[in-house]
Each structure stands twice: as C-alpha cells, then as structure tokens.
Amino acid sequence: MQDRILVLGAGGQIGTDLVDTLREDYGTANVVATDLKEPTPAQKEAGPFEQLDAQDGEALLALVKKYKITQVYHLVAMLSATAEKMPMRGWNLNMDTLFTVLELAREGHLKKVYWPSSIAAFGPTTPKQNTPQHTVMDPGTVYGISKLAGELWCDYYHKKYQVDVRGLRYPGLISYKAQPGGGTTDYAVDIFHKAVANEEYQCFMGAETTLPMMYMPDAIKATIGIMEAPAEKVQLRTSYNVAAFSFNPQELYTAIKAQKPDFKMSYAVDERDAIAQGWPQSIDDSAARKHWGWQPDYSLEQMVKDMLAQLSKA
Ligand code: AKB
Image (cartoon, rainbow, N blue to C red; front, side):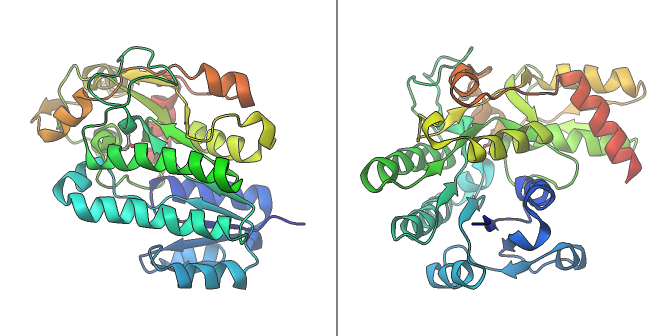
C-alpha cells in the first residue's frame, strides 16, 4: 500500500524543508502539509495543505481518515526560548499534541509516527563533550523537560502498545528556506541573513558558547532515514543522538568572514546564553550510525558556503 504522509507544523523551520523532500520522494499528492497558520499562496500551490490546530484531536483524526494517512511527522513545538516565557503553554502544547498523535497510532489509525527530541533534553550535569546516547538527563528548561518526558512516553507507547514511533535529538538546525522561531540556537541562522544583507549582526549568544549544530539537508536526511529504516534496526524508541559539527559564535563569525571579509559582529548577550550553557557541546551519535546507518554530509565550511550562496540567490 502506498504510504500517505501528514506533516504537522509544516510551515516551520524543519517542516518547510521536510515537506519539499517528502514530496520528491513520495509524490506531491501523498504528502499533506498542515499548520496552525493560514497557508501562503506558495504553500497552497505546492500541494495538499490543511489548516489545523494539532491540539484538536478530532480535526486531526478527520484529516487522517480523509487522506488515508499512514504516517505522521509531528513537528509542532514551542521551542526553548519562547517556552521559558510561557512555561505552561509550552508544556501543554508540546505534550498534548504528542499524546494526540500517539493515541491515534495506538488506536490503529497510523502505521508510523515521527516525533523530534532535542539536545535540550540534556542538562547542566550531563557530560558536555561527546555526550553519550545514554547518560544523565536533567533538562533545565520547560522545552527540555517536555522533550525528555516525550521521549519516555514514545518508548512507553512502543513497548506497551507496539506503536512504531521514531525520533531524533536534533542539535541546532541551520537552514535558508524558513526561519527558526523562538529557539536558543536561532542566532546561527539570523547571522547569515545579516551577512548577506551586508549588515552588522548583534549576537545574543556569548562568543565562546559552543553548541552542536547541523545543516538542514543533513537533518532531513536523518529524519527520513530513521523513518525508512527497517523497524528492527530502530532499537531505541526514546530518540537517537545525531550530530554533524559544533561551533561557538566566534568560530561561526570567522567562517563567514572568510567568505565575506567586510562582515561585522558585536555582542549583546541575553538569557538564551544561560540556556545554552546547560546543553552539550558535542554529541556522540555512534548508536544512530551503528543501528540504522546515519552519517552527515556537511562540514561547517560546506554549510557556510552553501548558506551564503542560497541566501544570496533569494
Ligand atoms: C532550540 O534552540 O530550542 C531548538 C533546539 C536545540 O531544540 N533549536
């Protein structure tokens, strides 16, 4: 049977790229994009799009039936920085939407579910270098707590109800098609927009605050990779560590400046730096590599060159 896919949060940073790639792989008509926001003319033209509040379980079930959906990629989330400003709303959104989708799968409406975790599921006493797959997890943000709890619920639904749910702990993601919204790692995208506009960038992250990061093509490759892996290879149903490279703002600035020598950056560090201080600096993703063959394609230098080239075209 042809898989039919529904993407929740399709207008977000990951969703925008993911929908394009899924449509290339599965055919436009087989990938339904949904988002809380009204579709743009481009989204309407690109393929099936439905406006949906992912917290509305009945509306979601109606779409699953209407389009005979077999897989859901659940990308709805309130990210770390925003959720710190409205903790209960962040918690409710992140958890309610996950339960809605897990329940649909438990009831037999879905064959497979994708749900993303994050490096935010780790915390201040987690080993910061080469953070292992299995280690101390003591997240210090509402977003991180929701990701850790979500991972455990995914594992529970898999063990107890045989729900085929798969997930990744994303590092900071860098992309040119859509802006991130409300994350701690957003500076690593904002900086490119300023560089291409020939404007100075004021960085909210401390110069030496190192975080694991990944270019979006690799994040999409990992996401579709784990979803297409044979079920027996996906041995962990919490979420897998995945990694590409790590840098701090000063190192990213140096890499951009090598391409754009006039680019200038200053610092106005805010509370997002403290969030980042509680996260890993580099990630051990050997379990993902061993179990289902993950490996990234882009280095920091390749990502910087491609970001500048893509944004300059726009
Ligand atoms: C954030 O900064 O909140 C996200 C994440 C690392 O999950 N980009």
